[in-house]
Length: 303
Image (cartoon, rainbow, N blue to C red; front, side, top):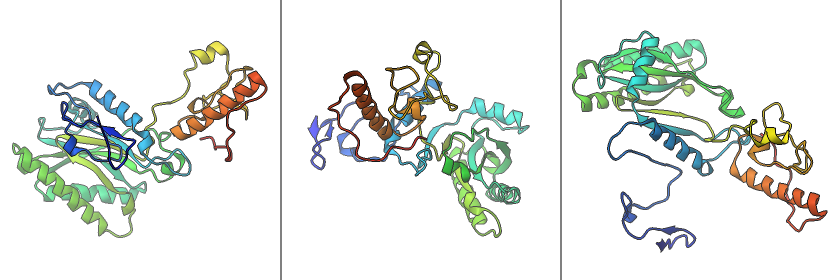
């Protein structure tokens, strides 16, 4: 291991190991990658990628409401079996694998604007020699985004596009898909009287697909009620988190809770701060005094 000269607190490997090459070392803003070197497809890769995403939460930012993230997402190989079943439910006939693309598109909430943009996207595909196959409404959980993000949440659709004139030519097909994206964006930019700002093509490819949103990539969804919470008989609030008093004590004397267990999904900085306060409260309860430092700022708001 070698010390980073720019930041003496960071240590990095000083020689190649596996896929790692020290000459490519550089700072990143929170990106993780997982793959199978033997090209084996597995849902475990997706689960591992989502775990990486959760572990990178600290590299992102959040809004003043604490629940709106600056964006989180995952890029995966096109899940063809899933897409074919989803298209069938929408009565969309897909050509053979490799001859169609699927993309995620953000659209306006206002119906007239949405229909105009959907038509523009279809026309852009047709103009590039491709065959627009149809739209699929993507199921969403409107409770997942934060309060601020939810107010501007777009309608999310999946677009299916056939290779058309470029069937059997995968590289040319991908190029035309890219040109279709740019053409659609330009068409919408020139349209007047619509919610153009809510339009965004997240991805459009015959190889990969991207899922993303203005989310906090939190792994915690709430305390498990059938474990220690039930054993201790702790009260939960209306959100399913542990109810506490201002001193972090739960409904059972001598039992304290802090962080996500009482706040719900939040950033690690809040969990650290509350954990310190809860430790001080427990110290006072047990000893009548505490030498632990007392916080010098105002109470942290609960999400």
